[in-house]
Length: 271
Image 1 (spheres, rainbow, N blue to C red):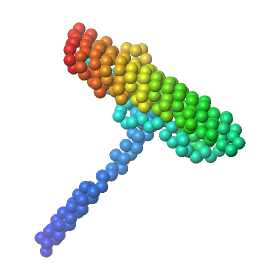
Image 2 (cartoon, rainbow, N blue to C red; image 1 turned 30 degrees about the vertical axis):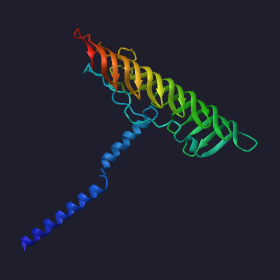
Image 3 (cartoon, rainbow, N blue to C red; image 1 turned 45 degrees about the vertical axis):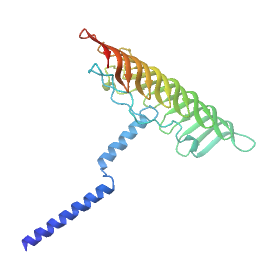
Image 4 (cartoon, one colour; image 1 turned 180 degrees about the vertical axis):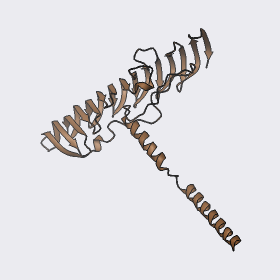
């Protein structure tokens, strides 16, 4: 009887394992702790001030043959006006045209808590205005047919700022972005990183300068492509070392000159 019971128990265990394996093959594994960490990470991205991008820990680079870490990861930035053109207006105070559409100057409050105060044309935000998101982010500048477009400024509650060109809600054209973060992550006591240069579709693209420190002792000046150093650029490290040459995907690639000033050594050639 004991042997039969052991056989039955073993059979039930095998069946449970088979069912479990089948479920795992047919549906994703759910881990509440992992889901919570992912949700927290997504929230940090939205609040980072990169237009719904995120930043890596900008730790000082000591490898010397590699560039400092990128300011943002590959998470694509959503347009800053991602939902404003589709948001339902709860209250409007201002001018109307003969057809009853919002026209002229007016202030609107949306059902999600966002507000807009500025110009309207044919029922759409148009001209100069101020759009305030419910989380406290503020855009001041031009609107075209309900979209953030032209020149303007963005201010995030965390202290991050952007001043420059925007197109359909993206940083596009030329502009300056200042990111303030915990000073514990920086040698710079102010904890500030600044990019001043060209943008395309919300990403660094073209030529621009990225300051890893406010004193400019650690910076990159040169070409960018799709948010990565690409083309010719000059990298000054906090240690005093310098790389001047070609880049690809944020890495030295092609002809370049690296000077390890702390060791009195240098290399000129291919990377």
